[in-house]
Amino acid sequence: MKTGYLIDMDGVIYRENQLIAGATEFVSALLATGTPFLFLTNNSAPTAEDLAVRLRHLGVQGLAGRHFYTSAMNTADFLSETHPNCTVFVVGEGGLVAALHEHKIANDAIQPDYVVVGEGAATTDKLAKAHELIEKGARLLATNPDNWCPVSSQKTRPGAGALAAFLESSTGRRAYYLGKPNGYMFQRARKKLAESARATVEQVVMIGDTMETDIRGAVESGLLGYLVLTGSTKLEDVGDYVYQPTRILQSVAELTPEVISGKIGDGGVHVGQTGRSSGSRHGQRHQTDVLALHKPRPRPAMTK
Ligand SMILES: [Mg+2]
Image (cartoon, rainbow, N blue to C red):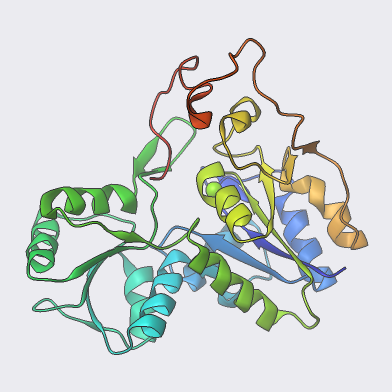
């Protein structure tokens, strides 16, 4: 059975500008075997080419822009498909500006159809302008719902979801969030994966480290969802979620032999083995609240 892979980057391939052990061998195996794959990231700041260069500097060779699909590219695809010739006011970085430009979506600081919020720095002036344009009728769109993004194991930065929340709060208008876990991101990525493959892709695996984006999106889009424990999710937290991964792996390194042999293995922890911590009460009023009362919650979920 031909398997294609959608692969998250931060927490799967690298972390804190350090490659995760075995990631290079995993990517080399994908390339050497001609296995269809696509890196899928919610980071709308870099372009696909920027990401290829970044990975090259980290030691992963052989990648090009075509191997990446960002939430910025997804936003540009969405707008050009659903609203051709629309205009936008952008609060975001180069990757978002470039993706919109590639789809010939014009910038408009007078009467745009959309205010598009992406990852990156935003000045108070820019947010004030976005606020004013939304009040004049522009619709609010965010490239991704991440409220915060990891910078290191000890440090995070505000994400596009937090910037969009600022504008939601000031204008009273709700944003629409693209990127993972939105099905449009997965639908488009799947299409791109199929186009790049030489044979029909019979099953698609999403590999990611974040339950709220990678695994939720995989479950909702009918893909296999493999959780790796090299990023933002700890094994003991997996049982908190209503949606569950198909497999749990220590890292992507465990998949390299499967890519080489072409046979999906059954290694890793399977759903059901994670369970919930013993001693938790049954019969809580809401399923999602089962462990919430018993565990310290240093911060709210990564996304909305
Ligand atoms: Mg990640």
